[in-house]
Structure formats: structure tokens, C-alpha cells
Image (cartoon, rainbow, N blue to C red):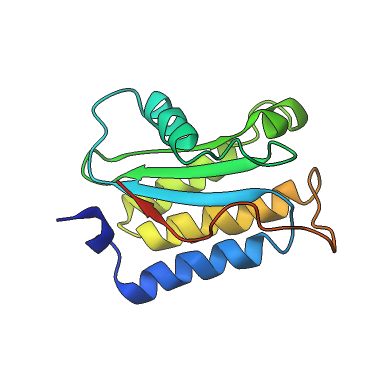
Length: 144
């Protein structure tokens, strides 16, 4: 299956809508990348994709990538250096745990949209949305 077919159109729309809504809480930029396989360490691959998507290209260095390799059953959520310098250690652990629970039930859309919503709410405390906020990254899902 090609990765862009992993989600039905309405599921892709739900994910994009979740990103749009989450980014109303924070100046953080959230993206989702989906591909079938990850043959290396999942965090190394997520960092590679993060850089390939130029997610570091934000003023506050507050990009977030939710990465899923569905056939390999691997996923990660990572933030840029502005986030990592600001949030407490273990910041992503709870979000990652709840994603894993949803994924284990086969609910990939729920796992991703839940992580997006929670990320927006959590980042609101560190990177609040402002009236002059500019959407610095596309909200669409990227596929590999």
C-alpha cells in the first residue's frame, strides 16, 4: 500500500483539522509524516525527516514532528531545539504513551489526533498563540 493511501480522505481531513485547531493554542508548528517502513532507529529517522521537511525553519525553533512508520510499527514525536530547551525532561512521555495505547487498538487516527491536540494544549504554556502568529509550516500530512 502506498503511504498516501494509509488514511482515507476523511481521516486525512480529521488530522489536518486537528493540527489547525491545536495551532490555535500555540505558536508551535505541528506536522505529521507517514511512511510504510523505518529500517533504522526510529528517532534517527524522525530527525532525518524533521530536517528534510525543514521543520527547523521557524522563528522560535518550535516545530513538532509526529512520525509514523505503519508497517514497521514504529513511531516518534520530537520537538525542535527551542522546545527541548524550554520544556521539562520527559515532556513527550505521556503523549507517546497515549499514542501507543491507541495504536495498539488499531486506532491510528485517534492516536495521532489525540497527540496533536495534547501537544497544542501542553505547548500553550510555553509557546502561547499570539494574534500576530504566522503559520510557518504546512498543516498537510507528508508521506514518504
